[in-house]
Length: 70
Image 1 (spheres, rainbow, N blue to C red):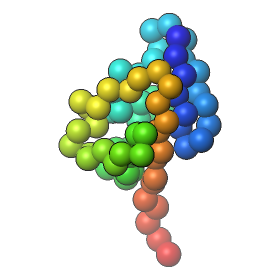
Image 2: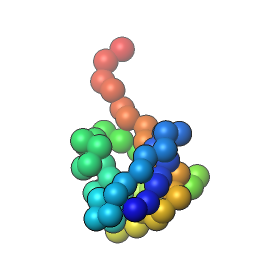
Image 3: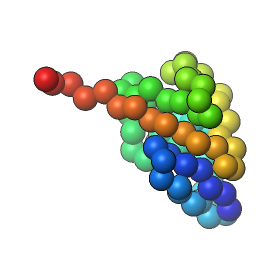
């Protein structure tokens, strides 16, 4: 069981549900990695490193999505 904050909202995950890395978290949230900038603990994560960026219990994740249009 673990908790992380995503865009200021605390999310709780049961045993076996906690995302291992940033890519898994985005997949769970149904967010396309090509349309998002991610920050963990104040550090911007390069898109090429999403799958190797480990999510830990208590992390604070900010996701900024790009929306086309004007």
